[in-house]
Length: 80
Image 1 (cartoon, rainbow, N blue to C red):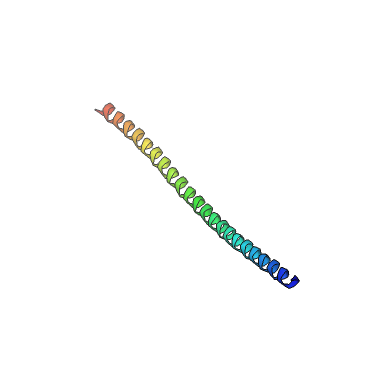
Image 2 (image 1 turned 90 degrees about the horizontal axis):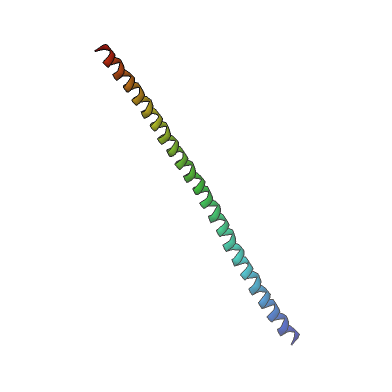
């Protein structure tokens, strides 16, 4: 009788430990997936910031070109 109780306790314990291992394994995999996604999000954020910076620089250069062209047109009008 005691042997049967011990075997059933051992069976439940092994089931519980395997359950904890599976939960831990999935938690570890989820943690790795989360870190990988976070790394990709940081990389995506960096690319977006570089793209925005490039747009701002292009807009500033276009404004400078317009100012220089307007100055050149004023000089042409004064010469004529």
